[in-house]
Length: 278
Ligand code: 2YG
Image 1 (spheres, rainbow, N blue to C red):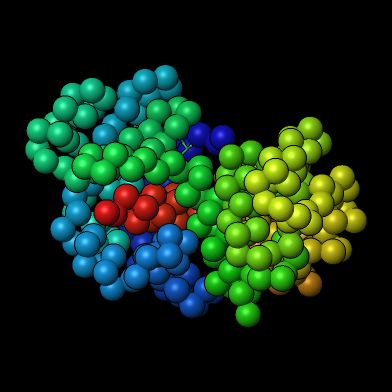
Image 2: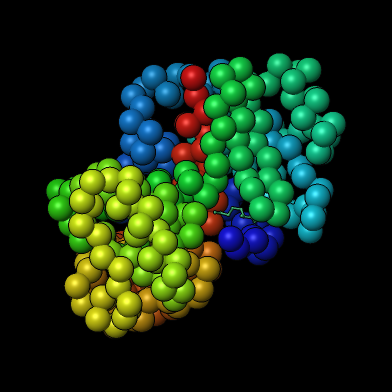
């Protein structure tokens, strides 16, 4: 899983309204709306609940330590979505103690390996990798003219994000192919999905070049830059790209334009938060 740099996230807080408008034009839904879509939550009810739902974001100094703007950015996304959010005045264990003592409804915190949300009353836990994969799959469902059901989607990257996206796509009736530079990872994911869903009819694609001809949709969940050649971008239908860095070149992103959704925190945090509502 990619560790964000401060450069990745520095501008997010100031352009949330712009990004929301971009999402509406590309998917027909807002950041909050997509998060409700993936959780099957009623939008109005969730808006009402969020207004009185407090989430404390706790800095975590373990491992490689603090990413300067990480907690502020997560809190800004939550506040933009209408949650009652703040960055805890204390980090680590003291921050957790403060959240309980001050009656927070939930906390969010991340070390180098895991970024999770915890509802302190219901004990529900949401995980960033899982929610990110699911919510970007929901984005493809929103971008496809008549929904993603029956459409062919190539899932690139068979790690935790790709797996969560694949599961969500199968649940929404997409016909998926799996691709990973590590064929063992792709084969492992296929066997898990075959066991979990009877006859999902999914394929492992061993050659990206031939695969790209067959799939009009891509869920790009790899940590490599420019994993998708520009040549695909022209005829493509849509790409949802949770992978950091973006798996397209600048040119490819320009060609895709309104058929590409990519961000480094916003959609995953939104899905984590809505998933914590009671
Ligand atoms: O509290 C802090 O500032 C740091 N302990 C945060 C460290 C976060 C490390 N994790 C990542 O950068 C990403 N896995 C976060 C999620 C990326 C978006 N999918």
